Amino acid sequence: MKKKIIGLVSFSALAPLFALAQQSNITCGLGGNIQFMICKVGQIISSIIPILIALGVVYFIWGVISYAIGKDEEAKKEGRSRIINGLIALLVIVSIWGLVGILQSTFGISQSGSATSIDIPCIPGTPGVTC
Image (cartoon, rainbow, N blue to C red; front, side, top):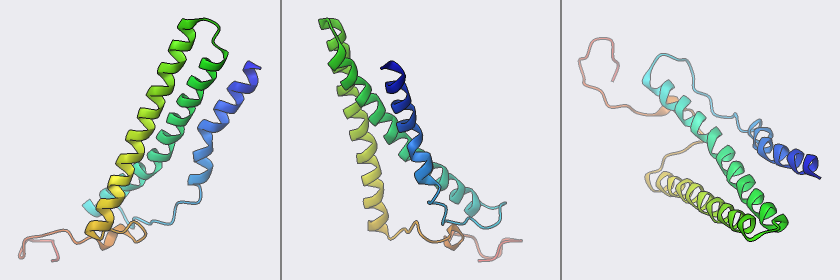
């Protein structure tokens, strides 16, 4: 029984990696400038968020299972604590993700295009910089 639960938890933790395999439609162009670094940071953050959500769900499920199979009051109390902490973590992650989405739509920032279209302010007349 424990091996099945461990296998299910392991698969649940790795499932977002399979979904991220289809999400590589954003290209960052060539490296070496600030636009490339901003694009790469955005790609890393967009890869981390689904993993954090999956970990929150796994922690919540772990709490539910430990609460359900807990024999004494201490085990049930620990399971209840895991359930509450998992729900709080999911609430925080999803609300921050939603807030970022609201800010993107408010300011007209698009994730679908290339990051090389970002206009970075510059000082006219700076050597080696095209404004």
